[in-house]
Structures are given as C-alpha cells and as structure tokens.
Image (cartoon, rainbow, N blue to C red):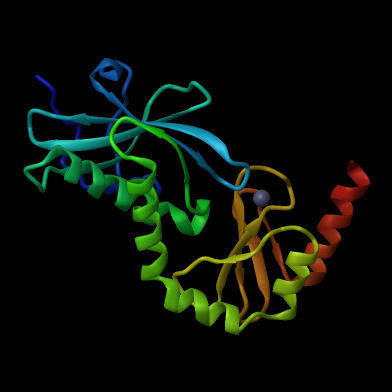
Length: 207
Ligand SMILES: [Zn+2]
C-alpha cells in the first residue's frame, strides 16, 4: 500500500511542509526527467510517485543524493500526464525567483517542446512585471552586469531582481532597486553597491 506521510499540499520551500523521507520508498518512484538548474547549470533528476490515497509526489536527486520530496498534491485530473504537468508547473513557478528557470535535458513524460511550452507560459505570465523591471533599470543593475553577475528580474515585483552570488556558489543574491540594496541569505551578506564592491575585492584578493 503506497500512502503519503502527510496530507499537506504544495512545494516545499522551507520547513512549513513535511512530506517525510524517501529511504524506504525510493523504489516506488518513477523516473520523470533530467533538468539543468541553478546559476551553475547543475544536473537534477526528477521522479514521481502516485499513491494509493490519490496523491502525486515530485522528488529530485542531485549529485546522486537520496531522493528528496519537493512537492505533493492531490490528484486533480483523470489523466496522469496532466497531474505530472500540474506538479511540475507549480514546482518551477515556486522556485524560479530563486533558481531561475530549468533547462530541459531528458524526460520519459515530456517532449522538449512540451517542457519548453511550460517555461514559456510561466515566463509570459510575469512578462508585464519583467518588462517594467527592465524599464526601471538602475546604475546598480548595470554595475552587476559589468561584474558578470548576470542580474535578471525575479518577476514577482518590478523592483525585485536576482543575480549570481559573487561567492561563486550555486545560489542567487536578491536585489531591490528601490534603494539599490542586495542581500545573500546563504552567505549572510547584504548592503548597497559599496558593500558589494568591498566583497568583490575580498574575493579577488583571496583567489
Ligand atoms: Zn551567497
């Protein structure tokens, strides 16, 4: 009997959701797709599991790690592919402000065209915000570009941007162009352009 650990629904972005471990159920997951994600284009492998209590789960493995359940929803559609489509969409939408959009590598369920259509639809849905962000580009955004940190609008509000973290690790820094401030929750650094310049200099001197 394949059953779920909790009846929560959503994409796990923090400790609010707990879908349980996968140690004893690893073999109940089926291969779904390979994608490239994060600013470093790291390979993620995705798997899904449909339970006897009518839930669908999405799990991923990164660097051969044990599967982590990232999302879970009740089955909403008759057709399995529509349920997979739904959970994949929600996962990408929840993570894109932090991870950017994934790139298709391989899938047992989606064709490359189908996967790219999902991404295009998600991108179009926040195109208005993205366009406004580009219209309101600030000198700080140009500074980030000049330093190869590849800033891009996060798409949730026109003053919110992301860029590569200067640490070179696989996460983004967040930027608000309202006061041209930035922060990295992982590296516990924040400030304005002066603080970033200082950090870039530290990194350069250390290398
Ligand atoms: Zn960082």
